[in-house]
Amino acid sequence: MMYSNLPFTATNIQGVDRHDNILRLHKDAEIELSDGDITITTYELNEVLHNVTVLSPTVIRNETNRIHYIQLSDNMISPVEDGGPNEYISIRTRPSC
Image 1: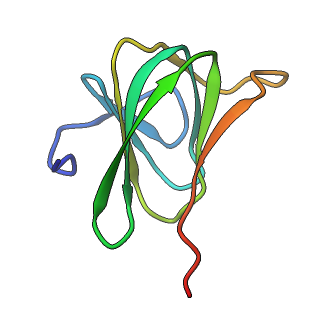
Image 2: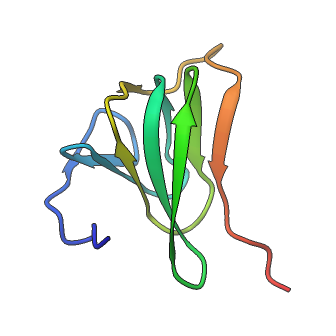
């Protein structure tokens, strides 16, 4: 998918932009998602799509220097609050060999 050409607009969450149901996460951005299906796009040698079913409120963090995209189904998003959920998904780069 080519998301970089979409007209994203800033959200009230630092480092997170949105276009329809697609989020763009910049470096060190984090969001809290409600339950639902999502697709996370990561980049290794090529673009890789990860289909994930979120079962309970979950925090997603971009711990890379790259922009990553998340396509939502009907999830609600919000900034991460102190004392929030204990479930995390971290987007990280693969270690180089």
